[in-house]
Image (cartoon, rainbow, N blue to C red; front, side, top):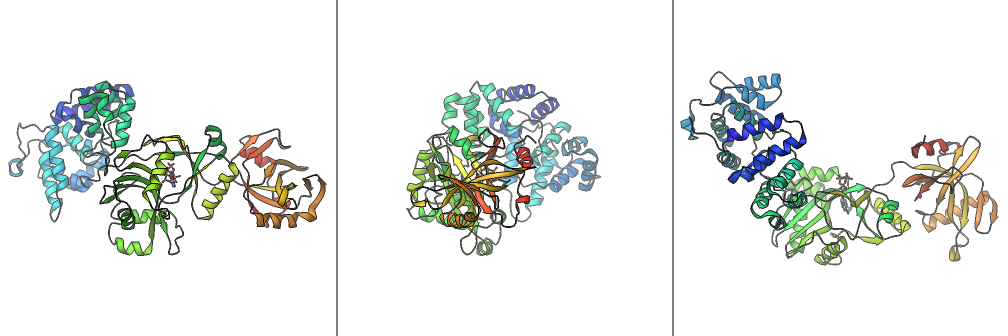
Length: 553
Ligand SMILES: Nc1ncnc2c1ncn2[C@@H]1O[C@H](COP(=O)(O)OP(=O)(O)OP(=O)(O)O)[C@@H](O)[C@H]1O
Protein backbone atom coordinates (compact mmCIF):
# COMPACT_ATOMS: atom_id res chain seq x y z
CA UNK A 1 0.00 0.00 0.00
CA UNK A 2 1.21 3.48 -0.79
CA UNK A 3 1.67 5.72 2.22
CA UNK A 4 -0.52 8.29 0.44
CA UNK A 5 -3.42 5.81 0.52
CA UNK A 6 -2.87 5.23 4.24
CA UNK A 7 -2.80 8.99 4.83
CA UNK A 8 -6.11 9.41 3.00
CA UNK A 9 -7.69 6.69 5.13
CA UNK A 10 -6.28 8.25 8.28
CA UNK A 11 -7.82 11.57 7.26
CA UNK A 12 -11.22 9.94 6.72
CA UNK A 13 -11.02 8.17 10.07
CA UNK A 14 -10.03 11.37 11.83
CA UNK A 15 -13.05 13.16 10.34
CA UNK A 16 -15.42 10.51 11.74
CA UNK A 17 -16.87 11.06 15.18
CA UNK A 18 -19.01 7.93 15.64
CA UNK A 19 -17.14 5.00 17.21
CA UNK A 20 -18.88 2.46 15.01
CA UNK A 21 -17.91 4.31 11.84
CA UNK A 22 -14.29 4.55 13.01
CA UNK A 23 -14.18 0.83 13.79
CA UNK A 24 -15.68 0.06 10.36
CA UNK A 25 -13.09 2.20 8.61
CA UNK A 26 -10.24 0.51 10.49
CA UNK A 27 -11.81 -2.89 9.77
CA UNK A 28 -11.81 -2.10 6.03
CA UNK A 29 -8.22 -0.90 6.24
CA UNK A 30 -7.11 -4.15 7.90
CA UNK A 31 -9.13 -6.36 5.56
CA UNK A 32 -7.41 -4.80 2.55
CA UNK A 33 -3.95 -4.49 4.13
CA UNK A 34 -2.32 -7.53 2.51
CA UNK A 35 1.35 -7.74 3.45
CA UNK A 36 1.18 -4.41 5.32
CA UNK A 37 -1.22 -5.64 8.00
CA UNK A 38 1.31 -5.72 10.86
CA UNK A 39 2.60 -2.27 10.04
CA UNK A 40 -0.85 -0.73 9.61
CA UNK A 41 -2.07 -2.17 12.92
CA UNK A 42 0.73 -0.19 14.56
CA UNK A 43 0.61 2.93 12.38
CA UNK A 44 -3.09 3.59 13.10
CA UNK A 45 -2.11 3.87 16.75
CA UNK A 46 0.89 6.04 15.95
CA UNK A 47 3.38 3.26 16.70
CA UNK A 48 6.31 2.00 14.72
CA UNK A 49 7.33 -0.60 17.30
CA UNK A 50 5.08 -2.84 19.41
CA UNK A 51 4.14 -1.51 22.83
CA UNK A 52 6.38 -3.96 24.67
CA UNK A 53 9.55 -2.97 22.84
CA UNK A 54 11.72 -0.41 24.50
CA UNK A 55 13.03 0.64 21.08
CA UNK A 56 11.94 4.13 20.00
CA UNK A 57 12.66 6.38 17.06
CA UNK A 58 14.22 8.84 19.48
CA UNK A 59 13.29 11.82 17.37
CA UNK A 60 12.77 14.99 19.35
CA UNK A 61 10.41 17.70 18.05
CA UNK A 62 13.28 19.98 17.08
CA UNK A 63 14.83 17.34 14.86
CA UNK A 64 11.50 16.86 13.12
CA UNK A 65 11.10 20.64 12.61
CA UNK A 66 14.54 20.75 11.02
CA UNK A 67 13.71 17.96 8.60
CA UNK A 68 10.43 19.64 7.63
CA UNK A 69 12.20 22.98 7.21
CA UNK A 70 14.82 21.49 4.92
CA UNK A 71 12.21 19.74 2.83
CA UNK A 72 10.21 22.99 2.65
CA UNK A 73 13.06 24.84 0.91
CA UNK A 74 15.89 27.25 1.44
CA UNK A 75 13.88 30.04 2.95
CA UNK A 76 12.36 27.98 5.75
CA UNK A 77 14.08 27.38 9.10
CA UNK A 78 13.24 25.12 12.04
CA UNK A 79 12.27 28.29 13.91
CA UNK A 80 9.75 29.12 11.18
CA UNK A 81 8.23 25.65 11.55
CA UNK A 82 8.02 26.14 15.30
CA UNK A 83 6.43 29.56 14.73
CA UNK A 84 3.74 28.03 12.53
CA UNK A 85 3.20 25.37 15.17
CA UNK A 86 2.50 28.07 17.73
CA UNK A 87 -0.17 29.47 15.37
CA UNK A 88 -1.64 26.21 14.13
CA UNK A 89 -1.30 24.16 17.30
CA UNK A 90 -0.61 20.76 15.74
CA UNK A 91 2.46 19.46 13.88
CA UNK A 92 0.50 17.52 11.25
CA UNK A 93 -1.28 20.65 10.07
CA UNK A 94 2.04 22.49 10.00
CA UNK A 95 3.79 19.80 7.94
CA UNK A 96 0.81 19.64 5.57
CA UNK A 97 0.90 23.41 5.11
CA UNK A 98 4.29 23.36 3.36
CA UNK A 99 4.91 22.24 -0.17
CA UNK A 100 7.44 19.51 0.54
CA UNK A 101 7.18 17.04 -2.31
CA UNK A 102 9.74 16.95 -5.13
CA UNK A 103 12.36 19.10 -3.46
CA UNK A 104 15.90 19.25 -4.72
CA UNK A 105 18.58 17.06 -3.27
CA UNK A 106 16.64 13.82 -3.19
CA UNK A 107 19.04 11.96 -5.37
CA UNK A 108 21.89 12.92 -3.05
CA UNK A 109 20.21 11.03 -0.23
CA UNK A 110 19.36 8.04 -2.34
CA UNK A 111 15.74 7.94 -1.34
CA UNK A 112 14.22 7.88 -4.77
CA UNK A 113 12.20 10.93 -5.69
CA UNK A 114 10.01 12.15 -8.49
CA UNK A 115 7.19 9.77 -9.17
CA UNK A 116 8.62 7.08 -6.94
CA UNK A 117 5.79 6.87 -4.41
CA UNK A 118 6.56 6.12 -0.79
CA UNK A 119 4.99 2.85 0.37
CA UNK A 120 3.96 1.89 3.87
CA UNK A 121 6.49 -0.96 3.82
CA UNK A 122 9.33 1.28 2.73
CA UNK A 123 8.45 3.90 5.31
CA UNK A 124 8.37 1.28 8.06
CA UNK A 125 11.74 -0.10 7.01
CA UNK A 126 13.30 3.37 6.77
CA UNK A 127 12.00 4.35 10.21
CA UNK A 128 13.43 1.15 11.69
CA UNK A 129 16.78 1.94 10.08
CA UNK A 130 16.52 5.44 11.51
CA UNK A 131 15.90 4.04 15.01
CA UNK A 132 19.04 1.93 14.71
CA UNK A 133 21.30 4.92 13.96
CA UNK A 134 23.52 5.69 16.90
CA UNK A 135 26.86 7.16 17.84
CA UNK A 136 28.36 10.54 17.05
CA UNK A 137 26.61 12.37 14.26
CA UNK A 138 23.51 10.23 14.68
CA UNK A 139 21.22 13.24 15.05
CA UNK A 140 22.43 14.65 11.73
CA UNK A 141 21.92 11.30 10.02
CA UNK A 142 18.40 11.09 11.43
CA UNK A 143 17.54 14.54 10.09
CA UNK A 144 18.89 13.49 6.69
CA UNK A 145 16.74 10.38 6.64
CA UNK A 146 13.64 12.27 7.74
CA UNK A 147 14.28 15.02 5.24
CA UNK A 148 14.42 12.34 2.55
CA UNK A 149 11.07 11.00 3.65
CA UNK A 150 9.33 14.38 3.94
CA UNK A 151 10.64 15.34 0.53
CA UNK A 152 8.68 12.51 -1.00
CA UNK A 153 5.44 13.44 0.72
CA UNK A 154 2.50 15.39 -0.62
CA UNK A 155 0.59 17.50 1.84
CA UNK A 156 -1.64 14.92 3.57
CA UNK A 157 1.17 12.36 3.75
CA UNK A 158 3.54 14.89 5.30
CA UNK A 159 1.02 15.64 8.02
CA UNK A 160 0.61 12.02 9.04
CA UNK A 161 4.32 11.31 8.75
CA UNK A 162 5.09 14.15 11.18
CA UNK A 163 2.45 12.85 13.56
CA UNK A 164 3.74 9.29 13.30
CA UNK A 165 7.37 10.14 14.02
CA UNK A 166 6.45 12.35 16.97
CA UNK A 167 3.99 9.72 18.35
CA UNK A 168 1.12 12.18 17.96
CA UNK A 169 -1.08 10.23 15.55
CA UNK A 170 -4.31 10.89 17.47
CA UNK A 171 -6.86 10.02 14.80
CA UNK A 172 -9.29 8.63 17.35
CA UNK A 173 -8.18 5.01 17.08
CA UNK A 174 -7.69 3.58 20.55
CA UNK A 175 -6.61 0.11 21.58
CA UNK A 176 -10.24 -1.03 21.82
CA UNK A 177 -10.91 0.08 18.23
CA UNK A 178 -7.97 -1.91 16.92
CA UNK A 179 -9.06 -4.96 18.90
CA UNK A 180 -12.64 -4.75 17.58
CA UNK A 181 -11.45 -4.10 14.02
CA UNK A 182 -9.18 -7.16 14.06
CA UNK A 183 -12.09 -9.27 15.29
CA UNK A 184 -14.48 -7.88 12.66
CA UNK A 185 -12.04 -7.98 9.74
CA UNK A 186 -11.05 -11.61 10.28
CA UNK A 187 -14.20 -12.96 11.90
CA UNK A 188 -12.64 -14.06 15.19
CA UNK A 189 -14.00 -13.55 18.72
CA UNK A 190 -13.17 -10.22 20.35
CA UNK A 191 -12.21 -12.01 23.59
CA UNK A 192 -9.63 -14.09 21.74
CA UNK A 193 -8.11 -10.97 20.22
CA UNK A 194 -8.10 -9.19 23.57
CA UNK A 195 -6.44 -12.09 25.32
CA UNK A 196 -3.73 -12.40 22.65
CA UNK A 197 -3.04 -8.67 22.90
CA UNK A 198 -2.82 -8.74 26.69
CA UNK A 199 -0.34 -11.58 26.55
CA UNK A 200 1.80 -10.25 23.69
CA UNK A 201 1.24 -6.48 23.54
CA UNK A 202 1.84 -6.78 19.83
CA UNK A 203 -1.20 -5.66 17.82
CA UNK A 204 0.55 -6.33 14.51
CA UNK A 205 1.36 -9.92 15.33
CA UNK A 206 -2.14 -10.53 16.72
CA UNK A 207 -3.78 -9.08 13.60
CA UNK A 208 -1.70 -11.32 11.37
CA UNK A 209 -2.38 -14.43 13.46
CA UNK A 210 -6.13 -13.69 13.35
CA UNK A 211 -6.11 -13.28 9.60
CA UNK A 212 -3.84 -16.18 8.70
CA UNK A 213 -4.82 -18.77 11.29
CA UNK A 214 -8.10 -17.58 12.79
CA UNK A 215 -9.12 -18.28 16.37
CA UNK A 216 -6.74 -21.23 16.64
CA UNK A 217 -3.86 -18.92 15.70
CA UNK A 218 -4.82 -16.46 18.42
CA UNK A 219 -4.81 -19.26 20.97
CA UNK A 220 -1.25 -20.17 20.09
CA UNK A 221 -0.06 -16.71 21.13
CA UNK A 222 1.25 -17.31 24.61
CA UNK A 223 3.84 -15.97 26.94
CA UNK A 224 7.32 -15.45 25.71
CA UNK A 225 10.23 -14.80 27.98
CA UNK A 226 11.49 -11.29 27.35
CA UNK A 227 8.11 -9.98 26.14
CA UNK A 228 6.26 -8.34 29.04
CA UNK A 229 2.64 -9.16 29.78
CA UNK A 230 0.15 -6.50 30.87
CA UNK A 231 -0.06 -6.48 34.65
CA UNK A 232 -3.17 -7.74 36.43
CA UNK A 233 -4.64 -4.86 38.45
CA UNK A 234 -6.76 -4.48 41.54
CA UNK A 235 -9.95 -2.72 42.60
CA UNK A 236 -10.40 -1.07 45.94
CA UNK A 237 -12.07 -3.56 48.28
CA UNK A 238 -13.10 -4.36 51.81
CA UNK A 239 -12.66 -7.45 53.96
CA UNK A 240 -16.44 -7.65 54.37
CA UNK A 241 -16.91 -7.50 50.60
CA UNK A 242 -14.45 -10.25 49.74
CA UNK A 243 -15.71 -12.57 52.46
CA UNK A 244 -19.19 -12.21 51.02
CA UNK A 245 -17.91 -13.08 47.54
CA UNK A 246 -15.36 -15.82 48.26
CA UNK A 247 -15.08 -18.73 50.70
CA UNK A 248 -11.58 -17.65 51.64
CA UNK A 249 -9.37 -14.75 50.78
CA UNK A 250 -5.69 -14.95 49.93
CA UNK A 251 -4.13 -12.16 51.94
CA UNK A 252 -0.79 -10.60 51.07
CA UNK A 253 0.98 -7.49 52.20
CA UNK A 254 0.58 -4.59 49.81
CA UNK A 255 4.17 -3.52 49.46
CA UNK A 256 4.83 0.18 49.05
CA UNK A 257 7.08 0.05 46.03
CA UNK A 258 6.88 -0.25 42.27
CA UNK A 259 5.60 -3.12 40.16
CA UNK A 260 8.15 -5.17 38.34
CA UNK A 261 7.91 -8.15 36.01
CA UNK A 262 10.87 -10.50 36.00
CA UNK A 263 11.74 -12.45 32.85
CA UNK A 264 14.50 -15.02 33.32
CA UNK A 265 15.50 -17.21 30.39
CA UNK A 266 17.62 -19.60 32.43
CA UNK A 267 20.72 -17.41 32.22
CA UNK A 268 19.86 -13.76 32.09
CA UNK A 269 17.18 -11.77 33.86
CA UNK A 270 15.34 -8.82 32.35
CA UNK A 271 13.02 -6.56 34.32
CA UNK A 272 10.05 -4.53 33.13
CA UNK A 273 8.05 -1.82 34.84
CA UNK A 274 4.26 -1.68 35.03
CA UNK A 275 4.31 0.34 31.78
CA UNK A 276 6.41 -2.37 30.18
CA UNK A 277 9.51 -0.25 30.05
CA UNK A 278 12.70 -2.17 30.56
CA UNK A 279 14.25 -1.45 33.97
CA UNK A 280 16.95 -4.13 34.01
CA UNK A 281 19.94 -1.80 34.15
CA UNK A 282 18.75 0.39 37.05
CA UNK A 283 18.07 -2.63 39.30
CA UNK A 284 21.24 -4.77 39.26
CA UNK A 285 20.66 -6.25 42.72
CA UNK A 286 17.30 -7.65 41.61
CA UNK A 287 18.98 -9.12 38.54
CA UNK A 288 21.68 -10.66 40.79
CA UNK A 289 19.09 -12.14 43.14
CA UNK A 290 17.20 -13.77 40.30
CA UNK A 291 20.22 -14.98 38.36
CA UNK A 292 21.94 -16.42 41.42
CA UNK A 293 18.86 -18.22 42.78
CA UNK A 294 16.93 -19.55 39.82
CA UNK A 295 18.01 -22.05 37.24
CA UNK A 296 14.98 -22.59 35.00
CA UNK A 297 13.17 -20.02 32.85
CA UNK A 298 10.43 -18.09 34.66
CA UNK A 299 8.21 -15.03 34.46
CA UNK A 300 7.42 -13.53 37.85
CA UNK A 301 5.28 -10.63 38.97
CA UNK A 302 6.25 -8.63 42.01
CA UNK A 303 7.01 -5.37 43.70
CA UNK A 304 10.39 -3.74 44.18
CA UNK A 305 10.74 -1.89 47.46
CA UNK A 306 13.48 0.55 48.46
CA UNK A 307 15.01 -0.15 51.85
CA UNK A 308 17.32 1.72 54.18
CA UNK A 309 20.48 0.36 55.80
CA UNK A 310 18.39 -1.53 58.39
CA UNK A 311 16.24 -3.12 55.73
CA UNK A 312 13.22 -0.95 56.59
CA UNK A 313 11.09 0.23 53.65
CA UNK A 314 11.54 3.73 52.27
CA UNK A 315 8.80 5.72 50.47
CA UNK A 316 8.06 4.37 47.01
CA UNK A 317 9.37 7.55 45.36
CA UNK A 318 12.83 6.21 46.20
CA UNK A 319 12.26 3.18 43.99
CA UNK A 320 11.01 5.34 41.17
CA UNK A 321 14.17 7.40 41.49
CA UNK A 322 16.16 4.18 40.99
CA UNK A 323 14.00 3.25 37.97
CA UNK A 324 14.88 6.52 36.29
CA UNK A 325 18.57 6.26 37.07
CA UNK A 326 20.42 5.48 33.86
CA UNK A 327 23.89 6.50 34.95
CA UNK A 328 25.83 5.98 38.14
CA UNK A 329 23.71 3.02 39.13
CA UNK A 330 26.47 1.86 41.44
CA UNK A 331 26.35 5.13 43.40
CA UNK A 332 22.54 5.09 43.52
CA UNK A 333 22.70 1.52 44.76
CA UNK A 334 24.81 2.60 47.67
CA UNK A 335 22.30 5.32 48.63
CA UNK A 336 19.18 3.22 48.32
CA UNK A 337 19.06 -0.54 48.13
CA UNK A 338 16.08 -2.28 46.57
CA UNK A 339 14.51 -5.61 47.32
CA UNK A 340 12.24 -7.83 45.24
CA UNK A 341 9.04 -9.23 46.71
CA UNK A 342 7.70 -11.67 44.13
CA UNK A 343 3.98 -12.39 44.53
CA UNK A 344 3.03 -14.28 41.38
CA UNK A 345 4.44 -16.75 38.91
CA UNK A 346 3.15 -16.59 35.33
CA UNK A 347 5.51 -19.10 33.78
CA UNK A 348 7.90 -21.68 35.17
CA UNK A 349 10.15 -24.01 33.27
CA UNK A 350 8.01 -24.38 30.16
CA UNK A 351 4.64 -24.21 31.93
CA UNK A 352 2.37 -21.25 31.25
CA UNK A 353 0.44 -20.65 34.44
CA UNK A 354 -1.87 -17.75 33.52
CA UNK A 355 -4.93 -19.99 33.69
CA UNK A 356 -3.92 -21.78 36.87
CA UNK A 357 -5.57 -20.68 40.13
CA UNK A 358 -3.63 -18.22 42.26
CA UNK A 359 -3.07 -20.85 44.92
CA UNK A 360 -1.31 -23.10 42.42
CA UNK A 361 0.72 -20.24 40.98
CA UNK A 362 1.82 -19.24 44.45
CA UNK A 363 2.85 -22.81 45.32
CA UNK A 364 4.91 -22.86 42.16
CA UNK A 365 6.47 -19.52 43.12
CA UNK A 366 7.42 -20.88 46.54
CA UNK A 367 8.96 -23.97 44.99
CA UNK A 368 11.38 -21.82 43.01
CA UNK A 369 13.08 -20.24 46.01
CA UNK A 370 14.73 -21.73 49.10
CA UNK A 371 12.42 -21.90 52.14
CA UNK A 372 14.33 -19.17 53.97
CA UNK A 373 14.33 -16.76 51.02
CA UNK A 374 12.70 -13.39 51.66
CA UNK A 375 11.97 -12.88 47.96
CA UNK A 376 8.63 -14.71 47.93
CA UNK A 377 5.82 -12.60 49.32
CA UNK A 378 3.90 -14.59 51.93
CA UNK A 379 0.30 -15.44 51.24
CA UNK A 380 -2.19 -16.39 53.97
CA UNK A 381 -5.56 -18.01 53.31
CA UNK A 382 -8.23 -16.82 55.69
CA UNK A 383 -11.97 -16.38 56.12
CA UNK A 384 -11.60 -14.74 59.50
CA UNK A 385 -11.97 -10.94 59.56
CA UNK A 386 -10.06 -10.60 62.83
CA UNK A 387 -7.14 -12.59 61.49
CA UNK A 388 -7.15 -10.47 58.33
CA UNK A 389 -7.25 -7.27 60.40
CA UNK A 390 -4.22 -8.53 62.32
CA UNK A 391 -2.37 -9.22 59.09
CA UNK A 392 -3.17 -5.70 57.97
CA UNK A 393 -1.87 -4.39 61.28
CA UNK A 394 1.37 -6.34 60.74
CA UNK A 395 1.73 -4.97 57.20
CA UNK A 396 1.25 -1.39 58.38
CA UNK A 397 3.59 -1.91 61.33
CA UNK A 398 6.22 -3.16 58.87
CA UNK A 399 5.92 0.13 56.97
CA UNK A 400 3.96 -1.29 54.02
CA UNK A 401 0.82 0.16 52.46
CA UNK A 402 -1.92 -2.22 53.56
CA UNK A 403 -3.04 -5.59 52.26
CA UNK A 404 -4.08 -7.17 49.00
CA UNK A 405 -7.06 -9.51 49.08
CA UNK A 406 -7.08 -11.99 46.21
CA UNK A 407 -9.43 -14.72 45.08
CA UNK A 408 -7.29 -17.85 45.56
CA UNK A 409 -9.19 -19.67 42.80
CA UNK A 410 -8.80 -16.98 40.14
CA UNK A 411 -6.61 -17.09 37.02
CA UNK A 412 -4.16 -14.29 36.20
CA UNK A 413 -5.99 -11.84 33.94
CA UNK A 414 -3.43 -9.61 32.23
CA UNK A 415 -4.38 -5.96 31.94
CA UNK A 416 -7.63 -6.40 33.89
CA UNK A 417 -8.72 -4.33 36.85
CA UNK A 418 -11.18 -6.99 37.94
CA UNK A 419 -12.81 -8.19 41.12
CA UNK A 420 -10.36 -11.01 41.73
CA UNK A 421 -7.73 -8.72 43.22
CA UNK A 422 -8.73 -6.07 45.71
CA UNK A 423 -6.54 -3.64 47.51
CA UNK A 424 -7.30 -2.52 51.01
CA UNK A 425 -5.46 0.48 52.18
CA UNK A 426 -5.97 1.71 55.72
CA UNK A 427 -9.09 3.72 56.31
CA UNK A 428 -8.67 7.29 55.35
CA UNK A 429 -11.35 8.31 57.81
CA UNK A 430 -11.24 7.23 61.44
CA UNK A 431 -13.78 7.92 64.16
CA UNK A 432 -13.13 9.11 67.68
CA UNK A 433 -15.68 7.29 69.81
CA UNK A 434 -16.53 7.49 73.48
CA UNK A 435 -16.32 4.11 75.22
CA UNK A 436 -19.64 3.57 77.02
CA UNK A 437 -19.50 -0.14 77.83
CA UNK A 438 -17.39 -3.27 77.76
CA UNK A 439 -17.50 -7.03 78.13
CA UNK A 440 -15.35 -9.26 80.32
CA UNK A 441 -13.31 -11.86 78.51
CA UNK A 442 -13.79 -15.61 78.83
CA UNK A 443 -11.79 -18.44 80.39
CA UNK A 444 -8.22 -17.45 81.06
CA UNK A 445 -9.06 -13.83 80.17
CA UNK A 446 -12.15 -13.61 82.44
CA UNK A 447 -10.57 -10.86 84.54
CA UNK A 448 -9.77 -8.66 81.59
CA UNK A 449 -12.10 -6.54 79.51
CA UNK A 450 -12.12 -7.92 75.97
CA UNK A 451 -14.56 -5.87 73.93
CA UNK A 452 -15.63 -2.24 74.10
CA UNK A 453 -18.87 -0.47 73.23
CA UNK A 454 -18.37 2.57 71.02
CA UNK A 455 -20.61 5.63 71.07
CA UNK A 456 -20.80 9.04 69.47
CA UNK A 457 -22.15 12.30 70.85
CA UNK A 458 -25.67 13.65 70.39
CA UNK A 459 -27.17 16.88 71.76
CA UNK A 460 -28.25 15.08 74.92
CA UNK A 461 -25.87 12.20 75.50
CA UNK A 462 -24.38 9.29 73.57
CA UNK A 463 -25.64 6.72 71.09
CA UNK A 464 -23.92 3.45 70.26
CA UNK A 465 -22.35 2.68 66.85
CA UNK A 466 -20.60 -0.65 67.45
CA UNK A 467 -18.24 -2.79 69.50
CA UNK A 468 -14.53 -3.12 69.02
CA UNK A 469 -12.40 -6.11 69.98
CA UNK A 470 -9.96 -6.21 67.08
CA UNK A 471 -6.56 -4.58 66.90
CA UNK A 472 -5.85 -4.65 70.67
CA UNK A 473 -2.91 -6.61 72.01
CA UNK A 474 -3.15 -8.59 75.27
CA UNK A 475 -0.85 -6.09 76.98
CA UNK A 476 -3.09 -3.23 75.84
CA UNK A 477 -6.16 -5.07 77.16
CA UNK A 478 -4.52 -5.35 80.58
CA UNK A 479 -3.78 -1.61 80.58
CA UNK A 480 -7.25 -0.72 79.35
CA UNK A 481 -8.89 -2.90 82.04
CA UNK A 482 -6.94 -1.07 84.71
CA UNK A 483 -7.87 2.26 83.20
CA UNK A 484 -11.61 1.46 82.92
CA UNK A 485 -12.12 -0.22 86.31
CA UNK A 486 -12.74 3.06 88.21
CA UNK A 487 -15.39 3.98 85.60
CA UNK A 488 -17.51 0.81 85.90
CA UNK A 489 -21.05 1.92 86.75
CA UNK A 490 -22.83 -1.46 86.65
CA UNK A 491 -22.21 -5.05 85.74
CA UNK A 492 -24.59 -7.70 84.52
CA UNK A 493 -22.86 -11.03 83.94
CA UNK A 494 -20.04 -10.31 81.48
CA UNK A 495 -21.64 -7.02 80.41
CA UNK A 496 -20.25 -3.83 81.87
CA UNK A 497 -21.72 -0.32 81.72
CA UNK A 498 -19.02 2.35 81.80
CA UNK A 499 -19.20 6.01 82.65
CA UNK A 500 -18.03 7.92 79.61
CA UNK A 501 -14.39 8.83 80.22
CA UNK A 502 -12.15 7.55 77.46
CA UNK A 503 -12.03 8.27 73.72
CA UNK A 504 -10.92 5.54 71.29
CA UNK A 505 -9.77 6.26 67.78
CA UNK A 506 -11.14 3.46 65.59
CA UNK A 507 -10.78 2.49 61.96
CA UNK A 508 -13.61 0.78 60.10
CA UNK A 509 -14.47 -0.43 56.64
CA UNK A 510 -17.79 1.25 56.19
CA UNK A 511 -20.75 2.70 58.05
CA UNK A 512 -24.04 0.96 57.44
CA UNK A 513 -27.58 1.80 58.46
CA UNK A 514 -28.44 -0.71 61.20
CA UNK A 515 -31.06 -1.29 63.87
CA UNK A 516 -28.51 -3.07 66.09
CA UNK A 517 -27.31 0.18 67.66
CA UNK A 518 -29.10 3.25 69.08
CA UNK A 519 -27.55 5.56 66.51
CA UNK A 520 -29.26 3.70 63.65
CA UNK A 521 -25.81 3.02 62.20
CA UNK A 522 -23.15 0.32 62.62
CA UNK A 523 -19.42 0.45 61.97
CA UNK A 524 -18.41 -2.59 59.93
CA UNK A 525 -15.18 -4.21 61.06
CA UNK A 526 -14.14 -1.58 63.58
CA UNK A 527 -10.48 -1.73 64.60
CA UNK A 528 -8.91 -0.17 67.67
CA UNK A 529 -6.20 2.25 66.66
CA UNK A 530 -5.37 4.19 69.84
CA UNK A 531 -6.63 5.89 72.98
CA UNK A 532 -6.99 9.57 72.14
CA UNK A 533 -5.29 10.83 75.28
CA UNK A 534 -5.40 14.30 73.77
CA UNK A 535 -9.19 14.38 73.38
CA UNK A 536 -11.88 15.13 75.91
CA UNK A 537 -15.39 13.68 75.62
CA UNK A 538 -16.52 16.90 73.95
CA UNK A 539 -13.91 16.42 71.26
CA UNK A 540 -15.27 12.99 70.33
CA UNK A 541 -17.18 12.58 67.06
CA UNK A 542 -20.89 13.32 66.83
CA UNK A 543 -23.83 11.45 65.33
CA UNK A 544 -23.96 14.21 62.75
CA UNK A 545 -20.50 13.25 61.50
CA UNK A 546 -21.49 9.57 61.36
CA UNK A 547 -24.53 10.52 59.26
CA UNK A 548 -22.31 12.51 56.96
CA UNK A 549 -19.76 9.69 56.59
CA UNK A 550 -22.57 7.25 55.87
CA UNK A 551 -23.66 9.56 53.07
CA UNK A 552 -26.89 10.58 54.81
CA UNK A 553 -25.82 13.92 56.15
N1 LIG B 1 1.17 -8.45 47.14
C1 LIG B 1 0.84 -7.68 46.11
N2 LIG B 1 0.05 -8.14 45.10
C2 LIG B 1 -0.30 -7.37 44.06
N3 LIG B 1 0.07 -6.08 43.92
C3 LIG B 1 0.84 -5.54 44.89
C4 LIG B 1 1.27 -6.31 46.01
N4 LIG B 1 2.03 -5.51 46.79
C5 LIG B 1 2.08 -4.32 46.20
N5 LIG B 1 1.37 -4.31 45.05
C6 LIG B 1 1.17 -3.13 44.19
O1 LIG B 1 -0.16 -2.73 44.33
C7 LIG B 1 -0.75 -2.46 43.07
C8 LIG B 1 -2.20 -2.94 43.11
O2 LIG B 1 -3.06 -1.90 42.91
P1 LIG B 1 -3.50 -1.49 41.43
O3 LIG B 1 -3.60 -2.71 40.60
O4 LIG B 1 -4.70 -0.66 41.53
O5 LIG B 1 -2.24 -0.66 40.94
P2 LIG B 1 -2.06 0.90 41.02
O6 LIG B 1 -3.03 1.53 40.07
O7 LIG B 1 -0.61 1.13 40.78
O8 LIG B 1 -2.50 1.28 42.48
P3 LIG B 1 -1.75 1.76 43.77
O9 LIG B 1 -1.48 3.21 43.57
O10 LIG B 1 -2.76 1.46 44.83
O11 LIG B 1 -0.49 0.95 43.93
C9 LIG B 1 0.04 -3.27 42.08
O12 LIG B 1 0.09 -2.64 40.82
C10 LIG B 1 1.41 -3.40 42.71
O13 LIG B 1 2.28 -2.41 42.22
